[in-house]
Structures are given as structure tokens and as C-alpha cells.
Image 1 (tube, one colour):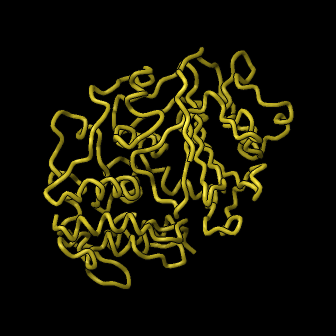
Image 2 (image 1 turned 90 degrees about the vertical axis):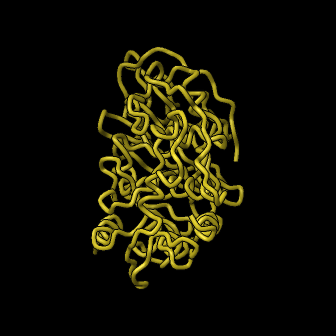
Length: 371
């Protein structure tokens, strides 16, 4: 049986299918450079972790050198009180990725004294020791927390922590699980993270990027804040912008949705899993931050979708976007269905079991208005 990623890539090669709670005040960056990084992301200074986990965490290390309990990873100063550690910086992308209706909170910890290499504004390179957490919250309760840690120049390690129903503890779950705590959420197997992260750019971190952090709806550690704190090696002259709009007045939200939900796989960034399909719905900061931004009709997300033919399983020939007709547009057809199995005839192709009706409406409104 093919893996979800293999099935998706095969289908794309044949058919050129399109795509796929709380806040904190940012603390100031600073501190001395570290000399080493443990697999769990703890920064080492003179042989000792700078965030010194409790003694019990010394025996908590599991596969890949990552902790078994979330409480040992450095996200929480006090997991019982849900107090976030001071060096875990809250951020919210301007347009979040759809996660079956779950709210998400995100935190990033950059190693003290290190910077993000932003020489290529569309392809940031993060320093070794970067740790990122994403918590999934449904019905006001934490369900899952994902951890992504850069331990070497070309290596990220990842795992997920499943919260108990009473939220007193969260323990590693690398195998994945459906219907966690009676919800419709799925914790995908840890290896499934690579289906998107592996080809998301020169470095593998997604969501924490120039476009999503420059939008007015971004929160916490935004592009502006990163520039002010001197965390970028080459900060851009502009750190805020609005998404391009056209005469329909529906283009901007639709483009933002495509960028965040589909642009990881469908872009011309080297290594993008579905880049060879020719579909490119990613927005590029190098263009949007440069003076007068491009018109909507000049964007890759327009030129590779509107009036461009595709083929979809069980549906027959379609245009990716048929102007004026969302029902006969492939981007809507695939986004508005869930087949019950991971595969290539729904988008995103796996780990999603509920349709993002609000997102589908954004696409449909733009198409109906006639881009």
C-alpha cells in the first residue's frame, strides 16, 4: 500500500491536481550564545542545559533523544498552572492552516544570541537549537501539542504529545491516533510530518515565515517584532503589508487561504512535494514586500489556476479555477470533500476529516465574482 505522500505525488504527476486561545506579550530576546544543542532542543552552555529541566527529566528521554513528557521539553515553566516558559515566544500566522476546527497556539524558542538567516526572504534558515510547539485546542481543551526541534544544520526532529482528558499531562504519541478524547481530531503519525515539512523550503519549518508574519492579522512575534529585536540577519525594509486585491474584492482572503493551506506543497520552492505539477499558489514575500506589490493577475496563484485545465479522479476534466463557476472549479471540488481515507481526491490529502466550510466559501466567493 502506498503512503499518503506517495499516493498524492503519483496522482499529481498524472493529473496535475491542485493543492492540497491565549496570547502572551513577547519577551525581549537576548543572552549568550550556546555551545551545543541536545536532541530535545535544550541549549547547552558549558555542558549544562540553560533551561535546566527538573531532575526527573533526566530519565525521561525517549526515541531520537526527545522527551516522553511535554513538561520536560521547555514549553511550560509550570505545566500544572499552564504557565508558558519566558523564552517560548507566542506567535500567530496571519492566515492559519486549517486543522479540522481546532484552535491553535504556537510558540517558538530561538537559541540565545542566534539569528534567523533571512538572506532569502522566502527561504529562512533557522539556527540549530530552534524549538517550535503547536498546541491544538478543541472545545476549550488541549488535545495535542506538536514539537519540532532543529538539532543539526540539516536535521529537524519531531514528535507529538497527547493530552489526557483532564489536561494534567501530555505524553508522546509517535504512532498517531484518531478521535482523540472523543473528538474528531487526528494525531498523525510523527513520520507523516515530513510529507509537508520535508519539502516546505530550504529549511523545514512552516507557518513561521515572512508573508504570514507580515499580515496585519499576525500576532505575537511578527515580522516587525523580529526586525526590531535584531533576530533577522537581513531584515526587510518593509515589515507589514496587505494581501493583493482585485476588482472582485474577494481575492485577498482567497489568496491567503491558498497560500497557507496549499502553498507549502504547491510552489516553485526547491523541494516542494508537488512543485512539478506546475500549480503554484504560494505568495512570495520578495514580491509583496518590494515597493508597489504585483497585481493579482500577475501572481503565480492566479496564472497557474484561472483557466488552467486539470483532471480530478471521479470527476473528470476540470479547470483549476473556472471563472464564475466554483462548482466546476477543481480547487473548490477537492477542498469541499473528505473521502474518509488518506489519498489524492481530497485536499489536504490526509489528517483532515472535516471540510473547512469557511475556507471553501472564501474560494467560492472569489471564483463566483469572476477573477
